[in-house]
Length: 331
Ligand SMILES: NC(=[NH2+])NCCC[C@H](N)C(=O)O
Ligand SMILES: [Mn+2]
Ligand SMILES: [Mn+2]
Image 1 (tube, rainbow, N blue to C red):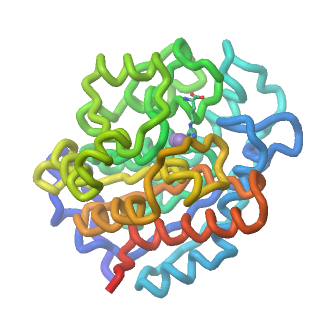
Image 2 (image 1 turned 45 degrees about the vertical axis):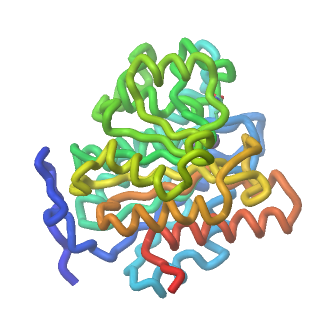
């Protein structure tokens, strides 16, 4: 098996990171930092989201990916345990800022290390603040990568605009360098530009976030556009925006709450009116088809928020989204 060299130039082309290495490195999060057996939690307040990854793994995701032809390296669950959840008072209203920052920094290094080896890092969350780490890691290896962010939420609050202080509602602003007010997050290099991110699925965007999206000219396809144009056209328009020649590396960050709660009920901030099962899978399939995918996140599966059947359903959907993004086809 050949491992292609990693492109670090700004003119990275598809041929530089293809053929797709067919090696996937799975990272999951289950360290004390994200567990909430105490009153603490990570980027969001609802206990249990740290248990999402283990459910996805126990449902057989690693073997499912092997069956698709991937050579899966699985890092295990405990790699960030050393990060303490103690002594982390809020900064302003930001909750658990040091813990979230340290975990994300470690994730960034891990993701970068796998990308450097020509592996495709798959990160299972955990909450979506982790994308600060995963996308930082991707951009350090693929500086010209674009980000496709699938979510009910824009996750682009700054310390000044957040109402909740939950950092899972903020990762994009750190990645864009819109908030440089918190020294604890100064390790996040503003390597992302507003033209290189596109959203699909939005329907619960805070007033301050709408202003940020407008002022920075960030392209977003809300559920309104999904209804108007259909998902096929929306994905095409989204790719035309961030990756017009289909030659740039793609980081896909998928928050399971983009799906309608009837499809993926076990998540911390469900919002009705979301993507159908097929719309969610279509996005993943279409991005795989570009041949440009270099990193994938599946975030916000929270098995403790609903009954066993709902958990099973959500975990199954999470696994099948990942399979679709990594090459499973219907025929
Ligand atoms: N990754 C998520 N589920 N984010 C939800 C964010 C909700 C809200 N906008 C906030 O900032 O708190
Ligand atoms: Mn999110
Ligand atoms: Mn969300």
